[in-house]
Length: 280
Figure (cartoon, rainbow, N blue to C red):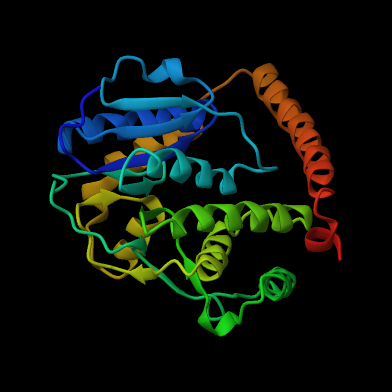
């Protein structure tokens, strides 16, 4: 494994066969377009990445009820080794050269986001939980940002990044305890605000990439030719929905249900250590 003098790495979360398969395509992209850049992958099967010298595959067992907030463990592992971590969703593709001299501000830089109030959407209960979390953290929502988490960087900031991860841990548990399983972009914004970690948005793409939902927006606005990305859509569809025997599908479904029950019980037990924050 060789990283030369680069002070950044890519990082992702790849749990389960579907996401490992997607991450392997991304692994090849990084090898081609960002040679000698370490790709840190938290995964349940590190051996799947054994043939790639630039991959640092770390064994990880899902901690959240759902895996969304487990992204924080990727950041934690990466930032302990590199000045900057570029988190990229496993289902993304890199389509062209990645510059070695990318300059990032300290803290968090996300490709897109907004104020957390502007992003509240139509789910009243979710926003009530966000507001309650802000109250517990003694934050005013007017100053909190929402981060779209599919592509963002975290750069060391005099230890604030560590405090940020600790707050994200607590917020993730609070959200999940109340049945709000996604919304990690809200947790990132709240945790950053509490840790006084800077958050900025930079919509200028540093390198070309493919993300299905972003590409669909580009196509709808006439900014992209759908035929050019057809192969990427088809490849993602094939990996996300493989043809499996019905018995295997049922087993996987049953396993996920059992694991979810276990994780909910574990969450309830661990949060009892701080009842004032989680239950009062």
